Image 1: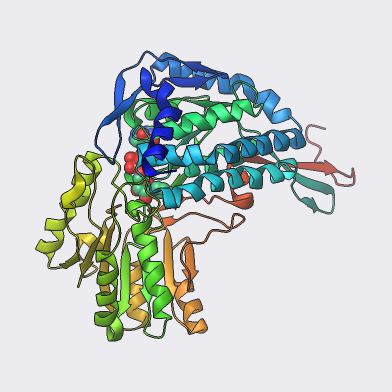
Image 2: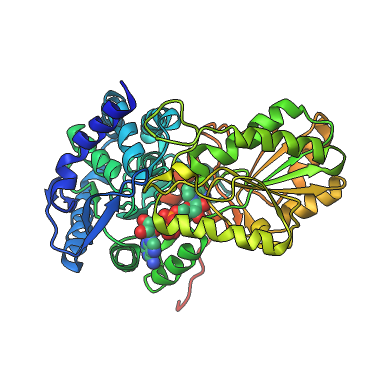
Length: 503
Ligand code: NAD
């Protein structure tokens, strides 16, 4: 397929959604929606692709009611049966992986070279949790002298899943797959800037045989639809991926009804390169982790900490590679960096350039939209060097193809600088000294540390952040712990004394 036929296929796949304001999917069927229209843009051209409908209070209530009604039967369904449905769902994702990937290129502006794998990863997420569904309720036997205690888990109830726009399909599957496997029902609100792949997912789920009401999707804005969903008394838990400040708002919104919350939030992740590292691999990984996904990746290596002894040579090589990155049409498989998601986000990322200059950093590559941007929201891959930890470009999540480079002296300085932000999601360490790799990993305030690697995720491992980067962990059994209540049952042997009062 050529890039333009791939784009045509994405336009065709979404034609029906774009025609007349995309509504919601409630209780197994499409609901047109009567709320306000919100534009969806194509990031690569800046043109309006279509609109979504912001859910009205009545539509939101209907989605939650559908999830509540469907909950008892879905929770009671044998895990083996849920497993079969979720595997079928994964089969259907695989069958439409190319189309889903193209849709991600269309409304999220993500590059084809990364999205073709991301759609398949979504299917893998469903298979992984499908296989674990039959044992999700298993607990522990905890015998005591007078009682046999055993624990078991049961699904918590209808849950809200609220996701961002950066890799919309894959991120949704991370949350929705374990929730469904655990026996919860779901109301999903995808990001308003990239809503189309979420609609494909909910339709596929029903084709796979998911009972109506088990998985519902509502469109709308965060401050209206998202807020109402997190405040709804029948929603028992909120799985949220997005910005840290939105996480704070959601915690407030959910507090009145005491909701359980799981937050995957922002990051300002360090990649720490010691002088003894395999510098070729470190260079490849540092560049890949910040410039892939258009720099809109929560685990991006957005701060490059390099030991001073190798800093000048290493940064010169980074600059050379950054200038050579291929920016352009996200549908072109040779493109490495596509557009940012939205004009507002482009403005935010651009706004950091005067701040960088004012604070005394140097811009060694990029620093502005490319001349060829047309109406698209492109920003050149950018390298900000000679930065200090105190600068805003070293503290704040820019969430674009912008790397901030900082020199460090020794191991203690590296750890101090790496930890000197409000965030603590991921960190990357490059050294050939295994003991140092272990010491630094232990000292870093990050939920995930990769030593001599880029972000290679093994699904059973815990994923999540410390500090302002999140609360809770995804992956393996950690996901089930969030979507399920643990219950202990104590069975007496009849051997212990019970105090007799009022005798
Ligand atoms: P965002 O917080 O603006 O929006 C995320 C979602 O929350 C959207 O669906 C939005 O409509 C909704 N929302 C906004 N306000 C809300 C409210 N008051 N109540 C309920 N819902 C509300 O985030 P974004 O700009 O879409 O995404 C980028 C952010 O996501 C970055 O900070 C990035 O680091 C983070 N992210 C984190 C991870 C992770 O795993 N830690 C993964 C991907 C992205």
